Image 1 (cartoon, one colour):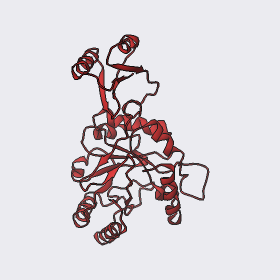
Image 2: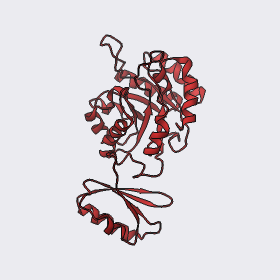
Image 3: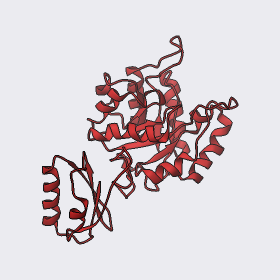
Image 4: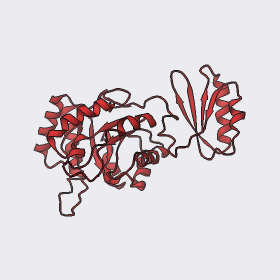
Length: 293
């Protein structure tokens, strides 16, 4: 249930309403916009009298939500969420950001060379994989903790915020100075990991699984947000279809739809989506045209 308050509602009256709602055993998510304040009610609202609440002087309207995702829902939070990083870089709300770097960190020379190139190109964040999930157990699995140390060195040299993958909750302490923690496509529904990430105060880049729906992506975001961490960045990175000319099929229709249903920032990964370097530029341009900024 959503309660939209009138623009000039008295603070005392708003406080009294929230206190009463919480006394009914419900949680309240408060979203303050320029035109109105929205109270999102979390929990079983079936016992509440919507007509009674709507009759209050400070209430503009009351709406019931049919979607299972609450905190990620734009109805709960009409204004775009904006993630701001230490160097002033912003993601979401019309702010354009580019993340670039090696899929897998292989050596200090490789990473620092690429990091300097990323900086010179004008990108705003450095992305590199320290922990790498692989289809084959015999493939390189990443430098792990050493890879994070190399990322931190690149961050010191370039001044760029860093983004890297996490595979499970065990190494979370290693990510203390990482600016954005990435949950890869294979871990989008690793719910125990999502719960733990909900307990930390750090932006989470959540990639859509290669066989997951948009609703499932939003529900995974809800897992993290339910734990208290609302700094989520959604990522469309392609889904698996019958097409074999590209690694995956980039679902650009998801961009405007996800922005319609959710207030969370959304980026597109044209590299992992297509698997072809020559397609990165046109697909990046297409992503921007579809609203990924």
